[in-house]
Image: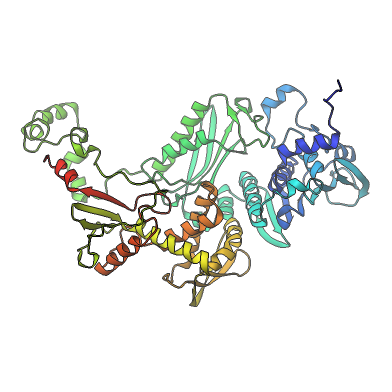
Length: 601
């Protein structure tokens, strides 16, 4: 029987190992930036071509390397950070595994130039397929320049799995943002395709947040600062009005290392409870500093997932620190401002409700009239009455087809429609009524119109008499660049106009003009939620986003004619019972159900 087990050649083994560390250009950006930080650089320049597929170059003014170290750094598990196993539990540097440069050299062509301060001449190496091909002395500044060229040139199958340039650029910008946020005292520069995207000067953390995440945060941040014997928490959280549908602007750092932690995110969400809607996410940039011995950072190849020795303590500290910060800056409600100021100043409001007062109140005739059985004014708990679960007809699933919304016996032209709370439309039926949610209904209408238009021909645009210029941050600009062709087919005429700036020349013909800046920002935010958070297909995400954007809003007053047109258009929809995201567009109430609510059988 022949032997079947054999040892892989080094170049194949290296490529397999590299796949754990270098999955896309952004992975190399992360590793190279962290190496520059560990080299104690005060200036770091990231240069990209073709979204990192053709070139990722990081130039720093750090300590540099000797010729011997330059050769050794491309070996697997070569590191200056660890000498013994106990060092793993005292990690304070960004890199420590000794895998980054070895992995990069296995899947790309690398050129390294480096010089320490104590030598006059530096070292230049050219590496490919994990082998040093050339080595020579070179005149170069103190520090290191490492250029990674033609990523996956020797693994074409993996190169084919890379996304579009815009998508890969989004990942790169995210990694750049994480490192730049962690070290606001370092000057960072980012150049892509010979265009400067960022020039970040050293400054405070707040200044760096505003530089990276956008000017709107200038007046929307609340400082968090708590120091204890066990750990320190510092950073900023966004005021409740900055909460978004996506998790985009959320950053946790432990000992300056970016981490992902659903557990700590839950601590933040609980601190915001009752301040934001349940489907919104607050913004935060938070740093947790504690003894490295209390943290295990060696649990994942990307080092973004860590383990705390006592995560419950960390959770409690994070939650308490944010609550304290929000209360200190008068974000959490302390008074009911809906009450008249004169009422708030009454002694009955200001004085504490003691146990003696509570007992006296409980024995009063007024209290008894509302709490004891067989009293006219008694208020019963919801569980005691049928309306606890408000019986309504079961809403069909989103997949269910409903060709007809209304019974054929209804004459819509002679039916009186009523708007309720500027949000619902009451549609009478022979045996009850239907309650339509005007925004969800209109989202369904707009979605099906956009879907039909997309299948046939581009939507007509109306050009603006006064084109509007909008300014985005780098991440938003990259996303908009990716969406421009599809947006043009759907009626938006948007043209690039310099660095992160665009001109809106036109919008869909049936869309009201005005507030273009807010509209584009909202469009990008909603698209990120659907495409990135929910991972829906690109075109589906865009159609749902535009449908919601163009729909009438809850709280909007409608005329009798507008209500009638809305119901008529919903009647013509192929799937009028649900909104594009699967929520019901209407609820139905029958006379039998209403009779039961009032105690009639």
